[in-house]
Image (cartoon, rainbow, N blue to C red; front, side, top):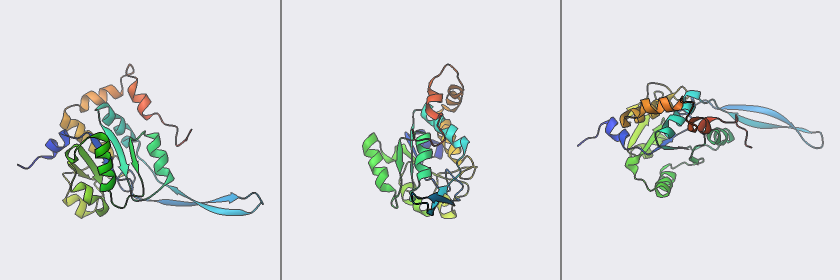
Length: 205
């Protein structure tokens, strides 16, 4: 019997995201910054910048209120990813992963879960190996056509514009807890939401 997207989403315990094109719009800004040396010489350091959606950040809180864990798996290595994921307190952060099933298997072993309990949100062909095997495969609205064709669900919003939040809310709705999580996130008597997503803007301390 073929499972519906809702049936698949109902089983999810861990949500994993690609970064570029999923939690961002896919653009990578390389900014030259002059750096003065101790001898007075000046060299140029290249700083990478990306933009992230605050809606996705709020969605991370909703997912945790729904009892799920979250993470990212990306092929690139970037300090901005490390900073943002630390800000969001992501449980799993894997960078420099050209073959993304390796960290997926590691997460499965750590958490004692099966592929059916993992959702993956992607946008490009590098994401297909995980999407083809995980329980719930999500493509963002700006994903490549090949990726959308193999997804169980395509988000209404583009990467970097709330697509992560779309995936999270679809899963929570399938579990029947979306409204409960939304209300808990704005409940002043509930200490969990602030502790989950009040970051320091990239401050490592």
